[in-house]
Image 1: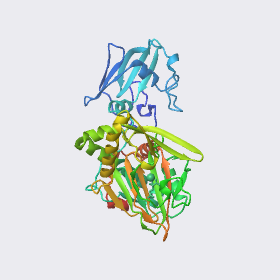
Image 2 (image 1 turned 90 degrees about the vertical axis):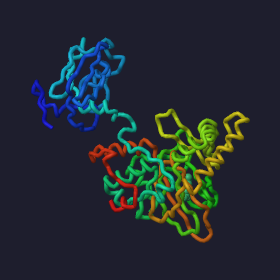
Image 3 (image 1 turned 180 degrees about the horizontal axis):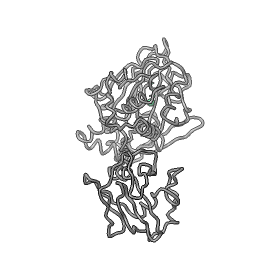
Image 4 (image 1 turned 180 degrees about the vertical axis):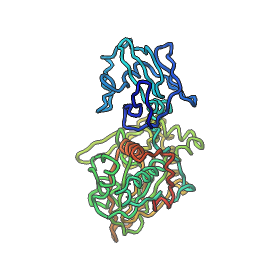
Length: 415
Ligand code: OGA
Ligand code: ZN
């Protein structure tokens, strides 16, 4: 859009303190507030109150936002704390202010201001909203074409959309090669290392350092509850699978938590408040962390489920709470592994299943290991990596999650 200001400046070239291209959401008016800030108002009535010091540090240019790094170059200890707004006007829809006593003029892109007013700068604003599910809603993981995701950003966006909304999304038709899980992970971001390595195997080991590397059943669980922040996402790629048994399972922890919150509030309270110490040991490592089974965090982040009996070591609660703690664990396990909450599907060679390790409880049935081979390769990514990739994909493809219109049905496979 070409807008020329009263002073003849092409306003479309107005820089913003970030990498987004904002629609030109022209302001209607601006008022100077008695407290020294400004109130900007759009024609539809939306408003934003701007503190003078916040505006000052977000002014693009010297001693403000550095146009190269797009980061704030003004340290608060160098800031004139008496800064206020001497004059404010709307010029071709943009906000123009004069900072006093500095005598500095700055213009602000109205689309950038509008995204703040609309709260699109908040961490979860540009991400699909999680949709809790039970078996009646979802019988199989949403499925996408693996080679398309490796090559094409729209396909990657569709897969990540389902992964963030449903918490689990599958790729099919990938080559059965060891390095593929790392390549798919790298499409998203940096892989998260652990004592199992950057990528790791899941197979029956003669000398296993994890229950995963046996042929035992793994009930609905999350990996590495032994860490302060368990890995956000997990990718498991099936290289070989000709054993009898070993079906994969997924349960939406969010749905289990929401169910318990209303149907069994005591159980929910015990699960969210009574803490356990988890441990993960081998000859070279000693990881420990203490937390509740359902960690509601500070209310700003999604709940984290800490559930894996092989690494749940010690109660970290008063001894008279233990009966309640064990009862609540039992209820949690019964529900998470029930036919109403847990989906069951075959993991075929070439499939890759990705899931939110802090929300979704994954598992597998026991299998017969003497007459075949079951070999997976896995990796972890921090939640931040998945969130960041999704935001950047939407930015570069010029999409908003709610406008993506991706389905989580089989049809998504043909995208
Ligand atoms: C794991 C795990 C699932 C499987 O390695 O943590 O849960 O299907 N594996 O083997
Ligand atoms: Zn696991």
